[in-house]
Length: 336
Image (cartoon, rainbow, N blue to C red):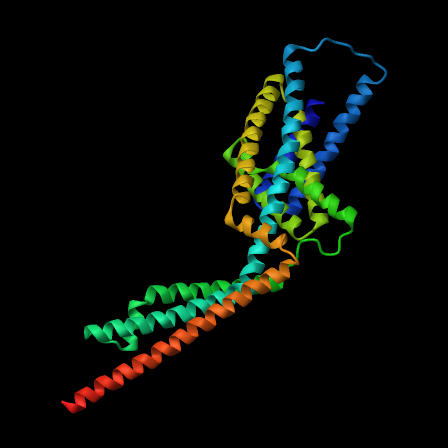
């Protein structure tokens, strides 16, 4: 039996090494080998104790372990549910923000462009009356900060429009049952592999890599990938139960209880922050708008178009006034 434990441990450790090196095919094969040996350990134990009835009194440590296991299981489930809620909220708000920026962003850009042109004209008046140069080059240099921000906003608008066109809301052609399975797998894996519950820096780095795989698979509705990761997770859980002393189990469960409690607090705090944000308030306002969210967007666009037209009218008026002002100044120069 001891020899089988050693073989199991060797295969399992090799699988972890391969996973850290991102050689996931080799890692999966090593996990499968470890699982085969674990089955042999189980079969041998069943043969050894078949037909025997063993009764013994549980020690205080064993009773404490059972208590901690119940607490940890409950915390894992709560953490998984909260993490799924957080991801749904972040995804929904991200989608909304992208859509909002793409649908009305161009009109805010037009408004800023009109404001930039107005600022140039106002600066021309100021320079003209103070006797300073009012050529376009020097004026644009003075407003370079405004211009850079405008260019940055234009680039962001381009990215948002591209993201909206490419955006597929993560469900593709899955059936309702498959969608439920996808969410359940994601929740169960998040509560196992969340980096905040890692016990060492090495384990945290490994969990971070696995969570990247989990998030990628979930956000692209890749059910097969999540099932493969779930198989590895079961091996991780099985390994925790093999070869541990009572003190090691107690220590592990106490550490996980502390980590999970902290994780629950941090996820809850993040959810509260999102729900207190201006973006969430706007999201609720748009979603509850009567008659429909599309009409809300239409109203925002109409208002922005009107504001742009007003600024363009003001700009035309200022240009005309400045032209009359400079013409009059030239006439005075000629008279003298």
